Length: 257
Image 1 (spheres, rainbow, N blue to C red):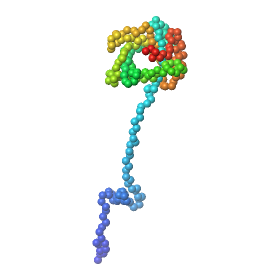
Image 2: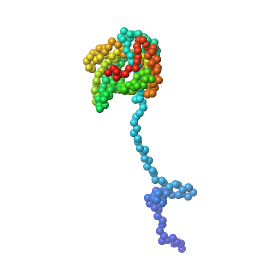
Image 3: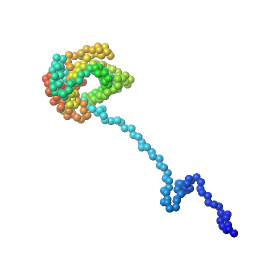
Image 4: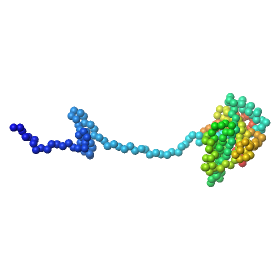
């Protein structure tokens, strides 16, 4: 007769819902089944959600916005122009000077401040395909007697051809316009511009012009970061070599108004 030992006992049930025979431990975490002869696997850990750091908006600073223009100005009569150009060819860098013919428009934006905000739009009339230029000139700093040149903030950027339409949409209005024609020389970082200003007789018609005077303006300038006042010494030394053909001086524009 065979033994009936174990009859009447309920067989053990495997817990459902746990793949691979996994069982739940303390706290409801899943635990892997442990195989004999193999080390126990670490329990599953609850995944943590990574939070993105907050985005801080900072103003854009730097670039050419803090550039200063150091400037000396003078004039020469028409009959002395060729002598001055000959002198400049000998003093400046060994390259042929550039010529230019530009149309410049001055735009004003009047607000609550006493003086209007002034921007200058300039385009080349003799070089096709060149961009327009937008220029801002700050108030001149005339107080420091140790500076041998006028100093003012300067921003000059190239723009698309719809610059004037953009300025009008911004609320600017054109105050006056003129044509400039002349020569550009370079000596290191110094730029020497000799040009004549022409009055536009019919607004918007750059073919109808006449000379504003019987002389040429001469400008010696350097654009450098703020605080580089030592460049004015080099400008003064160069200006001395142009005498007596032209006397370049530190001129306050307010005195001409």
